[in-house]
Length: 212
Image 1: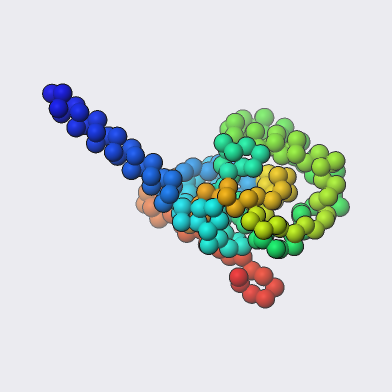
Image 2 (image 1 turned 90 degrees about the vertical axis):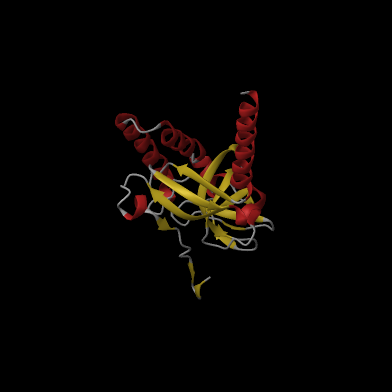
């Protein structure tokens, strides 16, 4: 009896170690929430396939969707798109124009709507963070250009109006990149609907001279 329990415990520990090894160094399957990557990723119900081959920025390219540790909170993960590589000149926020004061008003209205619609805590927290980080005083440099320093990238969400990203927390060290998102499943859909809405996450980034 004790020998059987010992073997079971040994196999369990080995399995857990293997899972941890794979999750840390090779592959991760995790849930994403929030509106910052719409329409690429859904606000709820999406799970992403993350390749750890690209960990620490290895072989990443502009336009890749990645998972990274948030610079202002290392315990929190973010899913964003790389829109600036080392040496690139970046317009801090091309979506802002001259409507800086309107932006805070829009976010405030979204927070009020969220309260009434009882959205999940994570999305509500993101909106509060967005409101806090986009006060007019902090937006004073949003029409400026910056150069991405060596060893860093510039990250933004595909849905710029609902994303806390490099426009808020600045350049992101490549060492915080945990992997590249290569595919996703939409569990809002059924198994028969293309295997729970499976799709590849492609790099569709274009430059003026063509695709990178």
